Image 1 (spheres, rainbow, N blue to C red):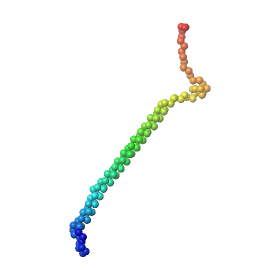
Image 2: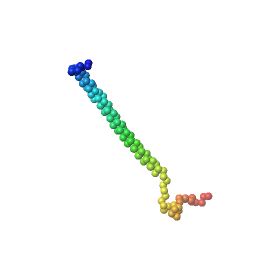
Image 3: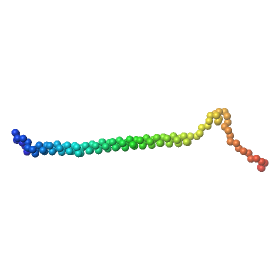
Image 4: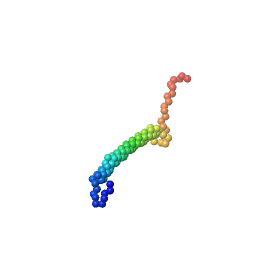
Length: 105
């Protein structure tokens, strides 16, 4: 109720304002802070998972490059040494073919 001029507020009105203040503090303390902590934890977890995914992607890239390089090296034809072959002016050694012995014709 409205106070008349010169009268003091009753005890119920003082407790009502204090109750609203306490209720506001409870809402901030018991609802907002856990929500903020949960959001911060979610962001930290997402960052951790993102770093883990980045490490896995980097490892997969390294494996891919190593496998590709090994396959290319394995598929290359062996090169002849420069001292054997037509470039050096000498003939490459030929395989020896044995002739049958004897006069059976």
